[in-house]
Length: 398
Image (cartoon, rainbow, N blue to C red; front, top):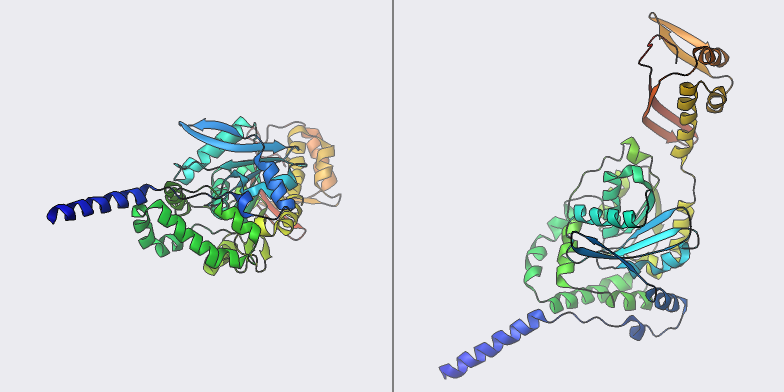
C-alpha cells in the first residue's frame, strides 16, 4: 500500500511541475476577430511590416520605425502590450511624422533599464528630439523620460496612467509576493477573468479590444518585471523650467478600471499646467476601442503651437541682439515704447527704448553670458526671469 501511495505522490508531483511550467496559450487575433473591417485589415497589414532590432547589454530590443516627417513620435506601450498595440496610431500619423514603437524585452525590470533601451533605439534612428506618447505603464515611462531628458522631449502625452506613488505597491503588496510562485497558466487565467469582468465591459464590450488583448504575447516573467517598473519610484519637479516648458497632455477615462480615481486626480495636480482630455465610458484602452477620437485629440495637441517656444524666440532675439549689437533683432524683441528700468549709483534709471538702442550701437558687440532662469505663461502674458552677465564691464547698461 505504501508503495502505491509513494507512486501516487510521485505522479502528483510530476503533474504539479508540469502544470507549473505549462506556458499560457496565445490565441490568434484573426481567428478571434471575425469582422473584416478597417481595424482588422489595418492590423493585418501592420503586422506584415518588417521590424528592426538593436542590442543593449546583450538584450534584443525589437521595434518598428517608419513614416515621414521632420518630427518623431515615440509610442510607449503599457504593461501588457507590445509594439503593435499602437497600430491604429502609427497608421494614422505616419504620413506626417516619423513614428517609432517598440516592444519592451521580457527581462527589463526598472525605469533606468527602460530608458537605456529607448535611448539606444533613438540613437539607431538618428533621433534627437521627439514627442513621447505613452499609455498606462508607458505613460509612467514617459514621465520618467521627461524627468531625466527634458531637453530632448518636445511634447509629452500621459495616457490612462498614474504619477509616482506608493498606492499601487501598497495595494498589491500581498499579490506581488504570491504571484512569483503561481504557474504561468494560472496568472494568465486570472488576467483573462479581469479582462472579461472589468476591462472589456468598461470599453462598451468592444470585440476589437477583447480579441486584441487576449492575443497579446504573455509570460509570467514579463508580467512580474513590468510590475517592478510601475512601482519603481522617481522624482520629478514639474515647476522646473526645463520640464514646465514641455507641453503636456493627460488623457484619461472617467471609468478607467485600472487607474484609481485618486491617482487620476493626483496626476492632474502634479502637472497643473497640462491639458486634460477625458474619455467618457471608454475604459483603459481608448486608443484601441475609440481610436478615431483618440487620434483626433492627439493630433490637435501635437499640432498646437508651444507658447513657451514663442516666448523663447523673443528672448533669443533679445539675447542675440545684445550680444551682436544687432538692432533689428532687438526691435523684434521689444515694442517701440518699451523702457529699460535699471539702477546706477543707487539711483533708479528709466531709459526709453530708442536710447537703449543708441547705447547698444555705441558699445558694439559684447561677450554677454545669457540664460533663461524661469518663465511662466498665463493666457497671452509671459513673465520671464533672465540672466545677462557682461564680465568685462559691469557698469554698462544692458
